[in-house]
Length: 311
Image (tube, rainbow, N blue to C red; front, side, top):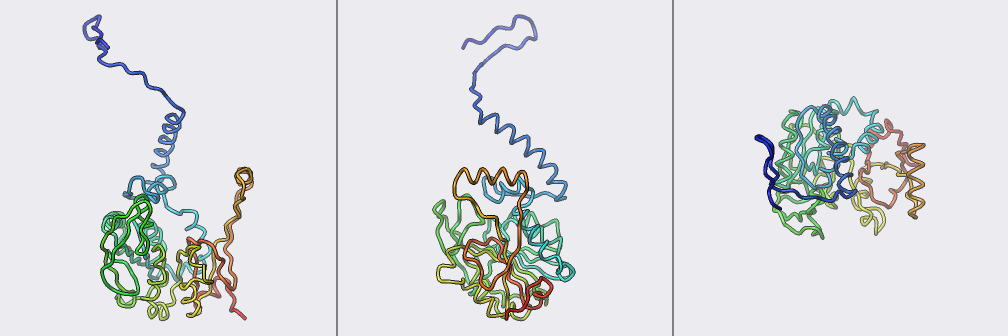
């Protein structure tokens, strides 16, 4: 292209002219960007402080969209736990597998103190940044397990929260050295926990084994993740360990997902019209499926949450 010559003093001369296609995807991207910017202002005002995330990471993407990762799940959980609100307000919570602090920040509004455990050095850097605004949160660069020592963590490339001590990820095999301690060996300002969240990608049983004395003594309510694979031999070991301490279990009864594409689209339309019904349920055995938030209720809280003693 030949640069044009200005026809009058002060008139701009074209140095490059390129025609670009405008696919539908580009228009959609612009709309999404504008929508996220509008939401960002709302989320920032609600949070009241800065929050750092990893770009292109599952949890970060969800925080950009909704302000809080697992927002609806946390709201449902604490609606169920409302009868314990006064106890929790004066109590201590442990966030085991705290990631970048999403759940710790949520818990800090409901507990007197939160101890957040995150062993991954990069993730811990964001956890410390995100929780510096709240003096109730104590960030610890360490994981919990059945044995104290130094271990190798397999890092998940697009979901650091999915990094595992047990399995190399198909999307990333970088190994990171981390420190592990036992809950039974920790001093938590002389106060036992009233609540624990454990999300450590299949390592939940090891966390429990390293803290059985503290758990038996303090009887915290425990929320933990359990994968479907852990039910292959019946009830998972973590469930059996806690049941042996008198714990009962409750979980979110998710609406069934239709098997066909047409059925799922019909369900989407029905949900838009009528909304979804969510229930917290219990049974003599935990349902064999993936549980992102399986609630283990100790004897001291069972009556308050409507869990009658088993016959």
